[in-house]
Length: 389
Image 1: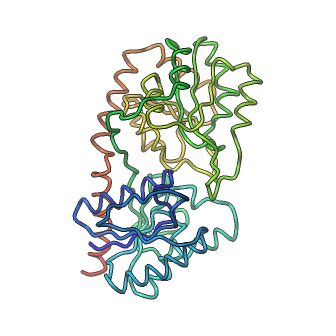
Image 2: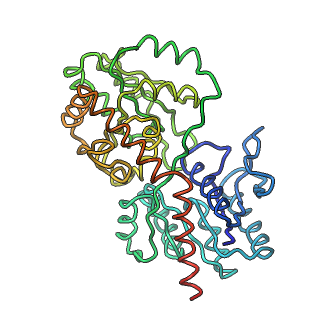
Image 3: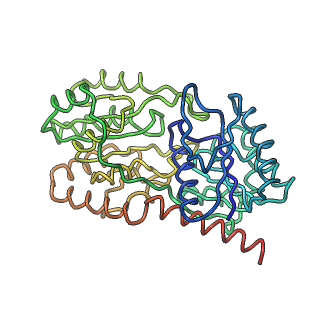
């Protein structure tokens, strides 16, 4: 296949959709397909990530309007020159350009849907995305829950394919962790340790966990420690909330200073050290009808390190955890259930090891990017086969 990817989200910018976009492009190329990429300008002083054989066409000016204009003009030029079989959008942000190019050039387009991108409760936004969803020949949902959300909007299930995100097994550490992280780990050595990783946004449920679950958990496991990794979502188009101060206040109000630490964004080497210390990964997401956890890629990233997970049963999280085999699911908004489930596992080290090893094996078998790219390729090829019987 010849694929033209139009993407607002692309490395070296760091983020979940950026990760998906790059590995989808690389994975399709590894399968023998041609992939050309149209993307926003590079951040200041950043270096391009693509190989010389697969250059990226970059917009010259910052901002979504300038990117969309570039995506249309550069996309039109590339499409006239190479005649792609399909246009691929890793998120809805680039779909307006794909919609227009599809109408001008009669090339079908496909969009990756992540969950919250179709739930933003703004009338203008909902009106804008309706033709973009309806015009796509294929919609890749990142979980079964996201697929159900699309079907609820009246979209034809025959045009929806569920393809969960993938993960890349980490290479051997090539950098040393920072002195600050080593000091934190030294000071907290030997304690039952929970870790949660992700942007500091409301739906992750960290404030509620600290305020309502951690007090119950401390009664059951007095020396428990929670490590919170992640920074504010300053670059998000959807999440404008600022949560870190709320977490700080919750730690102070609950007198959890020695039981919950906010570590901010970490380097790969530092995060490796955190995972090596962690007994259990927690993702206490809220069941918010307007902001859903599309899948929970961090669960798989922890699983690669042999760390099992406990999370709430909402959004696409049940696709990331094989319940009872690689981790546990509890109802959202139920602090006693979450505290009891965590305490039970922390007090059963053999069970923790079993779940962690199961999680690692499942992730390596089903969620590597080579396997995920093959599923994207199969969906796109099916789209083309239907178009050209």
